[in-house]
Length: 102
Image 1 (cartoon, rainbow, N blue to C red):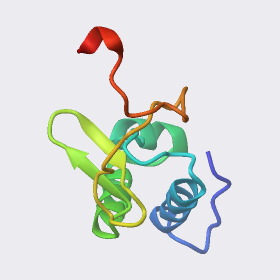
Image 2: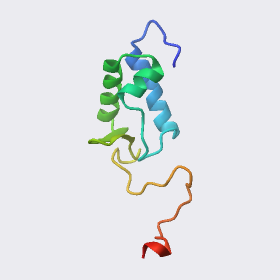
Image 3: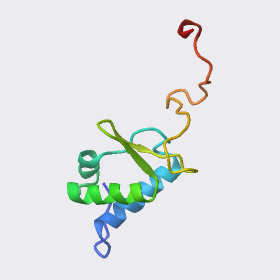
Image 4: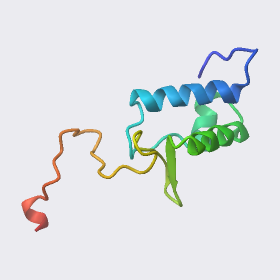
């Protein structure tokens, strides 16, 4: 949770924190970001407020959604899904298929 300032709307404060996290690489391009329920729980806000934050991030091109799957961090250069997604646990993974896959 954030220590909310009383002189600023919670949605703006959560939006600023989510922008910071995305730009800092906490949420890597192509990897999930919190959806409404998780964001509401994590920040102690209403789901309606979480929806407002998600819509603002979508409008800014910082995230994208895949229907029936979830919400993901966008490629910061394009605001779109990344061309190639590396696994978080193996950032040096190459594009070569394994010998078993051929």
